[in-house]
Amino acid sequence: MHKTDILKSLHLNEKNSPASTSTTDWSHTTNAGEITSYNPATGEPIASVYNCSMQDYEHVLSTAQKTFSTWRNIPAPKRGEIIRLIGEELRKYKDVLGSLVSLEMGKSKQEGNGEVQEMIDMADLAVGQSRMLFGNTMHSERPEHRMYEQWQPLGVIGVISAFNFPVAVWAWNAFIAAIAGNTVVWKPSPKTPLCALAVQHICNIVMQREKCDGLFSVFITDKNELAHHFVNDKRIPLISFTGSTIVGRQVNEMVAKRLGRCLLELSGNNAIIVDETANLKLAIPGIVFGAVGTAGQRCTTTRRLFVHESIYDKLVPTLLAAYKKITIGDPLNEKNLMGPLIDKGAQNQFLKTIDDIKQAGGNILFGGKTLDCDGFYVEPTLVEAAYDWDVVQRETFGPILYVMKYKTLEEAIAMNNHSHHGLSSAIFTNNLQHAETFLSARGSDCGIANINIGTSGAEIGGAFGGEKDTGGGREAGSDVWKAYMRRQTNTINWSSQLPLAQGIKFEIG
Image (cartoon, rainbow, N blue to C red; front, side, top):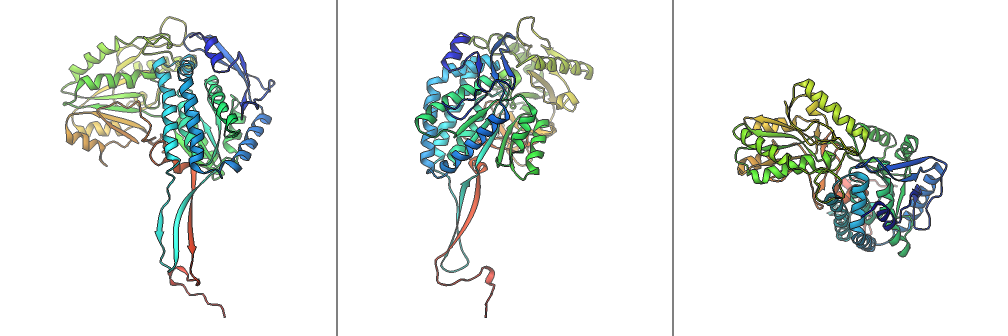
């Protein structure tokens, strides 16, 4: 599909408005500068978006606040019905929105479609969750008293997403926040603004039809001042931030100063252990997809590989053979498994990391170069290294995989846990004791620990997130809906007396 056809199908133009709360309420600001979106496969501009002004921002926030005052009173199952309708619209636009994700972000067409499917799955999950916002009941120590807890919405939820998942991560937050009774304001990455505006157009179709304008809003900016204002805004009780650990710390500090809440999904330095019993027919594709998918630009990308010394000489040649089969090129061509990095800065960071690897004494087994073509392409890279090198302990957002030997499972687990980050981890094994040890309290210290699947490609339903420098946040499945709500404990006295707790006597006169 041609660029022009993709934009037209998603109601986008060569120049686009910077903010929206509904179909009829797009900003017309043109004096705050422009953000140009580039195709990372060619380096050519796709379209541009005008920057959001402070006036635009204030309109978006005030509209979201006003909508919240009515949305919170709608029964949760009815709120779920709105999300179901948005999910149906996403099904209609899946192919073209997936193409836009590939065009603007650079991930393969298969992954672009997969990201939209993730939004659809998230909508389905949220619909079911809307009927299961459960609270507990407790027995009171006082006669003829009843105690229970219920969950109330927080208000306006702020979502800041990253370029690598330009639509799915918003859905993880927005759909659950909405069925919990909140409204959502989204600040997407300025590197992928068109994807965000396309999603807003799709939401607007349902919001206008169902008369719930302001439920989902978006504002686009590449100005730090406005982004900081958003994070510091006391009208927003929760900021969900996805991005680097460095920026996440800053966000956390700013929100904490105003006693707000933060949901952080930060960097990862994920590892796979392959033990002596592993089925390599499972392990090899799991390793390659984890390391190369999205050109290594996932927080769950496999960056470290620990191989038992007894199979090292068998696994590495097999892995090299698989790397040689990776097709690289235009992500809209479904024959290609790997597209470009997001921009020139990412490509330069890749090259700097390669220099650091060489200085550290790393042995580059495959790759390590940029491709001589248009766009921001690099070679998938396989490196023999040591687990405690500084370069190995950094998260490089690119397709670099460090491979290392180990002797014992305890050693491999220690190497896995040596990272400052704690997002995703995996072991390939046919040994039950090894699998259970990896999942035990003395095993992986990551938020995600997998057996016989890779580190990348989490599915909706389980809570997604990690520990340590990954931020501790959880999104998507399980009971993460509680993050977007406040707990309220209620006690009802239906007696004719007023007994106090703990047997306290307080008699007047």
